[in-house]
Amino acid sequence: MSVTRDLVLEQLKTVLNPLNGKDIVSAGMVKALTVDEGVVRFVLEIDPARAKAMEAARAEAETKIKALGATSVSIVMTAHAAAPPPPDLKGGGHGHAHGAAKATGPEKIPGVDRIIAIASGKGGVGKSTVAANLATALAAEGRRVGLLDADVYGPSQHRMLGITGRPASPDGKTILPLRNHGVTLMSLGLMTQEDEAVVWRGPMLMGALQQMLFQVQWGALDILIVDLPPGTGDVQMTLTQKAQVDGAIIVSTPQDIALLDARKGIDMFNKMNTPIIGLIENMSTHICSNCGHIEHIFGHGGVTKEAKKLGAPLLAEIPLHIDIRTTSDGGAPIVVSRSNSEQAEIFRTLARHLIATGQA
Ligand code: ADP
Image (cartoon, rainbow, N blue to C red; front, side, top):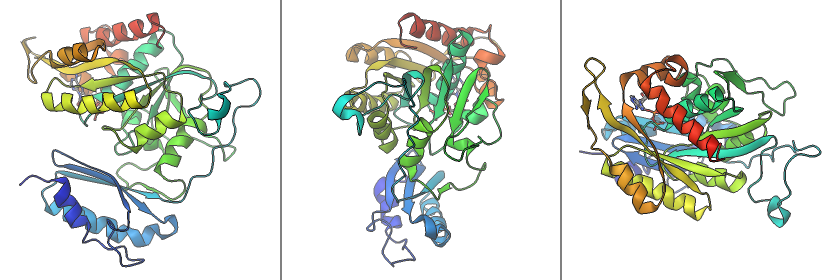
C-alpha cells in the first residue's frame, strides 16, 4: 500500500501534544507536509522551551508514519516564536532604496549583485548537484560566487563542496560563512550535527532562512545561488518575498511526473514575479561508464518540449553519469575534480552562457 497524504494526516491526528493534550494536526503544529513516493517530510512547529517534551511526540509520529510503509521520514522541529528582525547590516552606501516596499518587500542583500534560485518540483532530480556544479563553474570563470543551501529538509551542499566545521560568529550577530572550491557557502547543514534531528530553538524555520540571507557576511558577490528545497512551499515564498531574486532555474528529469511538478514551480515563480531563466533536463541520457553506450532511461526530450511550450529556454541537458555522482559524494563536484570531462564542460558552458547574457 502506498503512503498517501491523507493516511499520514490520519496517523498524525493520533499524536498528542503532551503540553495541552490536543492532537498535533488540529493544534496547527504540522506544516509543509509533503508525501512523495514514500518520502514523508514535514515541519513540526513547537515551543522552543519545550523541545525536550515534544521529542516524544516527534518520535511517535515518526514510528507511526514508518508503520504506514514510508521509506523515509523527515521531521524538522522549529520554534513558532517570531524571529528577531535581522540587524541592519547595510551601513552607508550599500543597498538600494525600494521606496514604500522597503520595510516588507524584497530587499537586496548588501554586497550581493544578483541572486539565482535553483528549484525543482520534487526531490532527487539533481537540483543540488546542478547548484554545486554551476556555482563552482561560475567561480572557475572568475565570478565571486556564494551558495546558500536553503534545502532545509536535507541540506547537502556542505558535503558536495567538501566543507566541514562550523561557521563562526565572532560578534554574536553576524555569521562568517565557509569557503571551498572558490565558493562561499552557508547551509543549515553546517549548523547542525550530521544525523541529528534538527531542532531550532531560536528563530523559526523562516527566520533561519532570513538569517542565512541577511546575517551572513557574504562579502562582495557577483552572484548568490540559492539551492531551494523541492516543491513550492514556505521557503520559496519567504525567499522571494524577502530577497530580490533575479531569476530561477528549474531542474527536472524527463519523466512526465517530474514535469508536472516542475510546472507548479514555474507557476509559483510567475506569481512571485521571479523571472524563469530556463529549465535544465537532468538525467537526460545514461552514458555507460564502461562502454559509452547511451540510453534514455527516463525518456528523452520531455523537458525540451515543456520548455518550448512555456517559452522558456532549455539551458542544458545533463546526462546520468556515475562520475557526476561520485565526485559530488567525494566533496569535489565534477567541474572541480574532472574539469576537462565532457560532463564538466556542460556546466561550464552553462556558466559562460549565464555570464554572457548578464544573468550571473
Ligand atoms: P536533489 O537536490 O534534487 O534532491 P541531488 O542533487 O541530491 O538531488 O541528487 C540526487 C542523487 O542523484 C545524488 O546522489 C546525486 O549525486 C545523483 N545525481 C544527480 N544528478 C546526477 C547525474 N546527472 N548523474 C549521476 N548522478 C546524479
